[in-house]
Image (cartoon, rainbow, N blue to C red):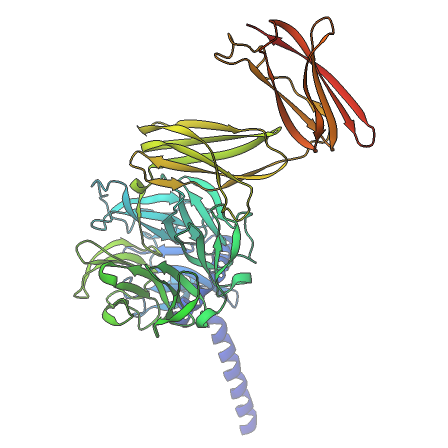
Length: 599
């Protein structure tokens, strides 16, 4: 009997443990925060699960408690419940939705859903918005809660626009927003595996890198990004084909190679990269270091030898830099130029970003808000509550003398038509047009110059035609030049002139032609195309059928070609021009068109 009771006791003990395991989350709060920070696909899975049950994925209570779905375990959605939005590790816990409903009143909460509008969307945001003029200078902070980018005043940290960029479908986990050297904003999005492109008004322009769209062999689980002095984009990557590496991309978003090779110097799970005058620094969450590399990407040493889950690196005057420490002991660490700690501030924990204001205070971000702290380790104020804030980046839109809104190239026969538009212009002298056929983009030819419109807030349109080209790929860029001589290159675009698939004789242009039509010249152009190498003869006849001029009679390679007819020596009137193609195999084709000369 006693043995039977012992067996039954053990049975119920095991059963109780199993039931408890099904009821209680398997993650402790610090572990859940770290693992989902490095693997945001878990957050995406949790959000998708909330959509199935029509429950919110994020909740912010008027009492200051913030909750967000982070993972799925035992078919339960696990929420990180942050009870102190400044010190996220203080008394925080992991709860299921059922537990949240039983413990908290949600009547006045701000709640975010996947498939329905946010409830109480303004809760946690200041009621007054900064109206101070900033001359085009801002701080940009991505927010994972609403998949948007927030804009602050860089002079004092005041909120300017809570919805500067709102793209809940395009953006799925925006990590960092920067101003690219090509004149548009780039946002690295951790879950969508893309660097997305927006204009300076926040309008979506498309994906930037990889150029062909999502390709996890190139970008997967991306974090911070930056630009080298040559304009190449570099991205920190935590998975996929470039795991633990820093790949680089050209001005068109095409993958070039690994700027910093995978694992170089012990690099493990990189999160941010910044460039100093003579080196670059990379924070890494799993190596728990700030690694130092040359400007060509070669490992030098570990500038910071130990820091728990470093995220954003913020360069400051005097050679100092700040590093946001995410995991405990979490703090904003201040270092001198050689990596010696000179200060640390831990009044806000779970840090992602940090930025020093002109008054010496710091703006910091974490999983539940944006804060201003001072050097006495005191919170000056909470700027925004209940937002999953990321990196903080300063941008100066006035550094863009011209805001280019489009730049396109279209192949037309043996020429390329370039068209571009601007939204605004500041001291714009004009545009040099550059062309190359070199895929390394090193040998550029200057084709011409188009005058700019100086300073204007009105949209402007420009065009340029590149003519007499043979078949092949061509790459173009614009060099926008200010009146003071400063300049900026646009992104590179490409087009291809294909070999024709049939014999073609085009109508001459202009037609009619002559001095009274074309001002001071009497030249017209004739385009023709041959799909194979051939001998080509073009002859001009008058109305009686008498030959008056031979235009060309020679061998041409397959492709598009152009010849000209000079009206000098010809009388006004109607003429015919005839083309004759003869291939090496004896194939013959001819065509005739009419032209008019007026003098």
